Length: 484
Image 1 (cartoon, helix red, strand yellow):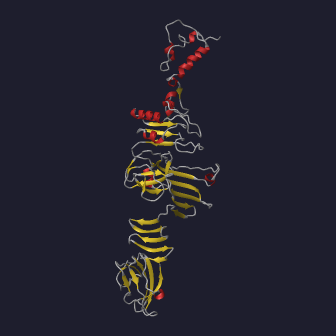
Image 2 (tube, rainbow, N blue to C red):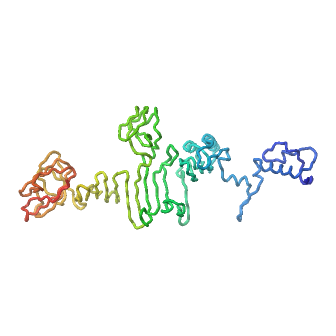
Image 3 (cartoon, one colour):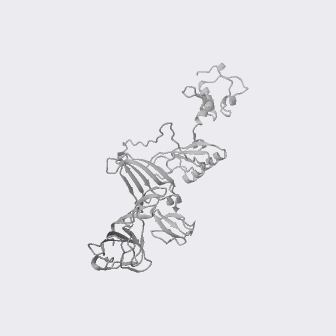
């Protein structure tokens, strides 16, 4: 058996003494007689020496860089902290939801970090199981999580995506900020190599998603997406700004309806397969969960109104393609408006799907210029260069602008319209603001000659256009068109 020369090593006893702070030599030092060590016994000494809690403090480290400063291995390894250093277990495997629930342990450790005044990053590795809302709520100010757990974010079992969430609970102005800085041109690359298969690869999808929070299943509540891709059905690039869950629903973060719960006025809940309901008055819920659509839905204690089919209830989007085409759509079937305005002046175009009506509107004058819809076609409104003239009574004066509005508080027979003095020809479009006016058919000067020779009562917002030529028609108003 090979022996280690006695002159090389200090006097040591057998491996029975305790190890304290990594000082194995001191722990094994003894006033007993000198004795020789075998090579295997010495290896045991060395193993115990460096595997002790302070062993890494006795190993040197220096970076391979000019001007590098010598550090210990322990100091270097403490640059990155991991919850496993605090005894947290990461034992969930790919495609699984089983494993040790570390929620309580993480809350305890994070709370202790806050008490200790720790500031910095701490990593949670893939496969650590916990309840996101509970653990994130326990993150103290100054601690930033690098959450690589992935499994807690509502992915289907077949998914094995690994992604990092950087989370901070700081309340300062820079809360949760991530900066990409450059002295010249800062940029963020979303690179799709097109090699993954599926439409996302083929059309080179890339997305920036904005989440308003997480729902009860730990899924993100997507509020906004900026999508870059190949335009559908075209050989062009497209950029889409897409708005998903409406703001008020997203920030309300509705939870599953529960019986016997005290709901505040304006509270929302989920029920009946994910439908969103809202209560006006609040109260304590009864025994029957709200179902269906409509208003006034009672659960036996609280009255609910149906709001939406779920968190993502539609997507208003704006598309821009590389040939300059601009497209906007609203699956929510709400009015779409495009506004060009400076300090309150300007105009907007608006499409109302409920009325199938397109309107060009002048903002500063507060009036429409033109309107087009399926029933009325194109009808002129009040031009921005002309003053708006309201007409009332049985024999109003003709508007000098060629367009006017007719308003009567009660039932009125409108028998004639006096033209502007000296004008022998005129075309006038009238919009009727109510259904109180009956235009009377006649044949005299300044009277109306109507289609079919029958009086007409226009509906509210109905239009009629008349033409007058004193030479050809003897001064009567000939009906040219109507919108009803």
